[in-house]
Amino acid sequence: MLHEQIRRLRLAEGLSQVELAHRLGVSKQSVSNWENNNIQPSVDLLERLADTFCVSTDALLGRTAVLSLNVEGLSEAEIAHLSLLVQDLRSRRGPA
Image (tube, rainbow, N blue to C red; front, top):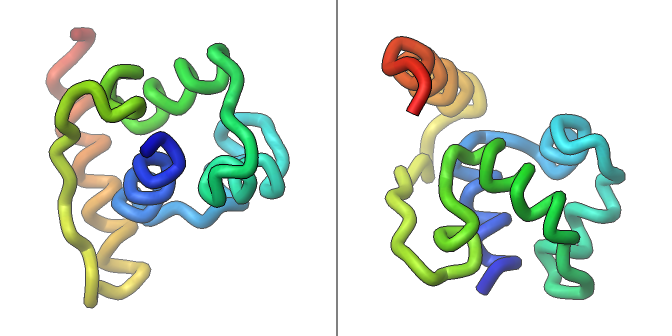
């Protein structure tokens, strides 16, 4: 379940494995291993993943629902634009 959530959220954000790895300070191989369910991220990295995707750790673990947006059929530029829009809306909202 966790491996599917990481992949789904990464794709929903329009990130490559390399880009997500860079944001988290890990190797691309780590992200690939998580998504292929070969290894699990540490608790620290689980928290950082949750922060990166603005979801709870419970959502990452499948204990609560995660709202997602289907970006299938959109170009990389369109996905990047949506990602920037979401980031802008979050920043206007202020601290939770």
